[in-house]
Image (cartoon, rainbow, N blue to C red; front, side, top):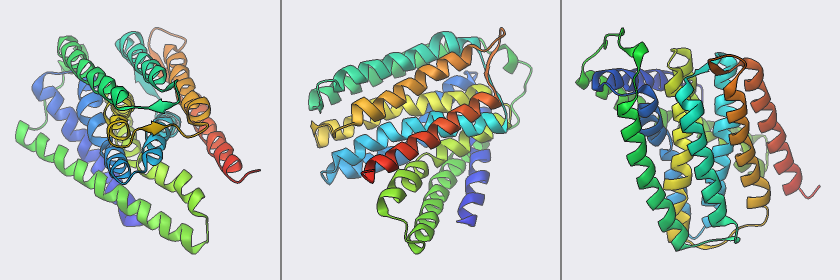
Length: 310
């Protein structure tokens, strides 16, 4: 597990380095790279888990993975990253990107409000994904990133792309190593499968997001850090959720919409509130990061108590 953690840290640093260098070489916004390349790349574990679960007829696991990962991304990933180093937010993120994420969260909720996930819902989500990709690429290329004009790219296209791929591969492999090690320790200590699933597995699939976001924040790539979280959450809803919708449609498990999805939506709105800040430049400070972490701990506690029948 120690080796996995070391690989996770190094892989995250190289992944963010490659992504930021490539962004400057291509002349596109770090936010665009964060939401698309980094966000999509770090969502790979969720996609894999949901695809396998749906094929095996376990759509409930896939649904829980989507909602649980989004909760973890905001409350734990963004919370820990902000505690490590406050995350500054460009005004475009607050005015343009966060409302879009809230809108997508609302539209997905409307599809689920009937208590079922159907193949039609999956088709609608995929259509929304296409619209989101087109819109994000257009606005990202049109955005003026004044702060990047004075920064010369440190590496060329080939080296930047190589570090991007190597970093992502290390993130994927290392996160699996950490999950395996933690699960083994938990079983030795005779911790129940339920607790393992609610904690280690849920956090494990979000380890790439956590490592990449923390590394981006530490390197001062604030737009890439927040873009990773927002992009990952959007991809989870629009690219991962269609797997159970198309491969294993059916009724939603009790409490998923009223409890878990409600927590996810509330955290998204709270992120918008925190992002306004008290000055011209919004930011997520350490106190707000701590609030997110406390909410996550409270949510996990609620799940454990509920599952144990207490």
